[in-house]
Amino acid sequence: MAHLEVDLVAADRKVWSGEASMVSAPAADGDIGILPGHAPVLATLRAGTVRITPTGGEVRQVRIDSGFLSVDGDRVTVVVDSVDDGSATTTAR
Amino acid sequence: MAGQQRVYRQRIRSTQSLKKIFRAMELIAASRIGKARARVDAASPYARAITRAVSAVATHADVDHPLTTERAELRRAAVLIVTADRGMAGAYSASVLREAERLLDQLVEEGKEPVLYVTGRRGVSYFSFRHRETARHWTGSSDAPTLETAREVVDTLLAAFLSEGDDAVGELHVVYTQFVNMVSQTPRVVRMLPLEVVEGVAEVGTEPLPLYEFEPSADVVLDALLPRYVQSRIYSFLLQAAASELASRQRAMHTATENAEELIRTFTRLANQARQAEITQEISEIVSGADALASS
Image (cartoon, rainbow over all chains, first blue to last red; front, side, top):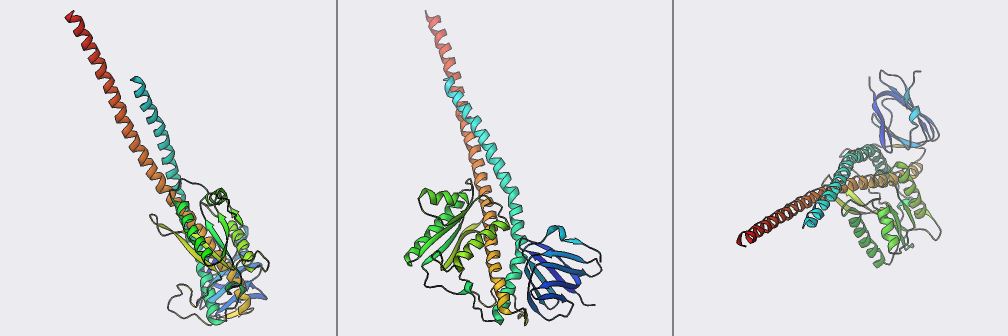
């Protein structure tokens, strides 16, 4: 099965990177969900939670305040200004 | 004569303690430099992602944004000068300031009025000693700049650039020290604003950029991207300057340690000479005394 290469970067460090089957992020006018094979998109993000479903892992939820998301082929880059450290934990769903 | 010897011994002792201080500072700088370089590396994925996104927008949309527009009617030009908080780093701050002076002269020649923004205590004291006004300065974190500092700097500068009032500036130059590698750091002048968005700004590679959809629209995305782009550039300048500062400090302290060793060697030699001279003199006094007794 195809999968997404996800990079979640904050201004001063890389927060998470790896393979995922789905990413959902709070885009400026409504949440956006990315599955493998998504069209290239550049979206601005508002405050909310980014959910990453890694292949064969538990869902990761990261609270962000703002940023943007780019999808290019199966590469997803989520760029955020600041990450709530406490929220960058793995949570079972 | 014994006084001579004592003076030398004293100077050897004080040089030895100085040497210990220099050595300690060298080691501190050396240990921090790794951290500083790691921070430069850690910030680069963000910078890459932003640059890529900016060039993606630039290729697809007409870039017409306040940050990219030349404001020719404004004669004021902001100059951000990145210096160190502390000395003991050889010519680090001096060479940044020299480069800055050159830029300032050039701006004045072009009929512009430079407005100074300074980070680092050395730069601040340089300008206040010469009674030259700085618009704003930041001190206290030159060897480990935080993202918050960078944000504050960028917010101030962007506000000045976008302002409509009398305090508006027409361009922004940054003078900082580029960290090339451990032995070479060069002061550099960069014209930051107005941004020149060239298609394919950075190492995008040979593959063409895909046709992006913009969410909600290209303009809004650009609006969000450009300030972040400026912020990431300036943050990376601050980080590089910090790494350069530590590298210069390490080198300066290494040289100082070696000089102290050299001094200690010289003084030891002089002290030995003085001791020997004293002994020789005592012997000749005793011999001549004995001679005088024997001949009487």
